[in-house]
Structures are given as C-alpha cells and as structure tokens.
Amino acid sequence: NAGVTQTPKFRVLKTGQSMTLLCAQDMNHEYMYWYRQDPGMGLRLIHYSVGEGTTAKGEVPDGYNVSRLKKQNFLLGLESAAPSQTSVYFCASSWAHRGQGNTEAFFGQGTRLTVV
Amino acid sequence: AQSVSQHNHHVILSEAASLELGCNYSYGGTVNLFWYVQYPGQHLQLLLKYFSGDPLVKGIKGFEAEFIKSKFSFNLRKPSVQWSDTAEYFCAVKGGSSNTGKLIFGQGTTLQVKP
Image (cartoon, rainbow over all chains, first blue to last red):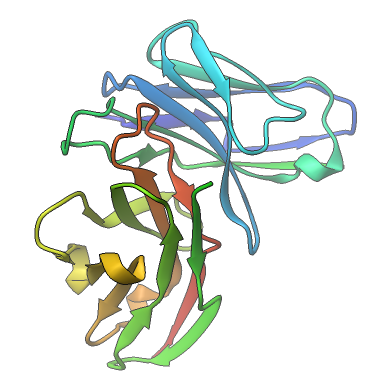
C-alpha cells in the first residue's frame, strides 16, 4: 500500500517554464489537497478537491492550476514559474467528512521545487 | 476565518527534558485538532488527533495533547524527550462539520534535542 505518492521529488525550473506535479493516492480517498511549505509559514493550502472532476481554491491559489480527472490523481500545474514559487509542495488526501470518523489527512513525501 | 498559532518557533532541549509546545486556534464551532511531525527530509506524519470525547489524547512515541476548549488550546506534551524527537511539529485544525476536510496549519515549531 503506497499511500500518497508524489512525482517528481525534486525539480529545478527556469523562470517562465511550466511543469506539472503529480499526486496519486491508492486509499480511495474522496478529498485531495495541495499545500506549499515555506520556512516560518507552515503549510498553506493552494487548491483542493472534494471529488473527481471538482476543484476549489485554497489560501494561496495564484499562479497555480489543478485538475482531478481521476479520483486517485490530483495534478498541480505551474504555467509560468516564478522564483516566488520556490517551495516544498505536499499533496495530501483524506476521506470525506463522516461525523467523528477518520478524516485525518495523509501526506506525500513532498516535491522540492526551485525556480531560478 | 480559522487560524492556528504556535507560540514557540524554535525550541532547544536536552535529552530527558520535558516538552510542551503551545497551540491556539481561532474557530467558532466544533473542531478537529491534529499534531503532525516532520522529521528532517521526510513528509508529515500524524502524531495524534482529537475529534471528540476525552480531551487528553495520547499519540505515538509517548506524545500527548490536551484540548482545553475554554482556552482554544491544544498543547503538545512529552515527559522526556529523546534525540530522535528532533523534528518540526505542526498543529492543525479542521472545522468539525467541514465538508471539505481542509486543514489549517500553524507556523510550525522546530524542536532540537541535544544528546
């Protein structure tokens, strides 16, 4: 059981280049999330999805796009990378809210992105 | 809007010292509360969680946390830290009736344990 898998693990981009980060989960979770982690700022939500074919903006969505064409995959795209997007990106997934049940989030290993 | 505040940004302890990391949140309704740990170079792992019931929650590796509703707090404690506890710790909150599951994280606390 792989859990949440992110690819790639590391990437260096030049300003203006584009790329897509892939997140895959094998736990049949309904919800998926993309966070970025920056020193002293914790994790901030970029975009999230509550089901296949649906996405929504989080706290810091500008400069990013996402797609959830399949339940198990959640893609994060950078159309024109900027140095301010240098960060560590984490994908997470969880079951839908079920009363007091299991709604903790499971995280991937992270993608360290540097934009030069 | 929901927010989470962690008071200690960087904590340095010697092995066997006791640990308490502060976490306060701002949210008007019922909440689910979490502590995650991130060891150097690794992803976030769940230490413990509170959904309801006993406000004293025990997690993995000897950690525990106490939910004090009147103080909007969920402080993390460990009686005796080990060098292997060196990591970054994140407090997070989710609305109890949330239909999105979104977690709001605190800024994180870096714990350094000296052998």
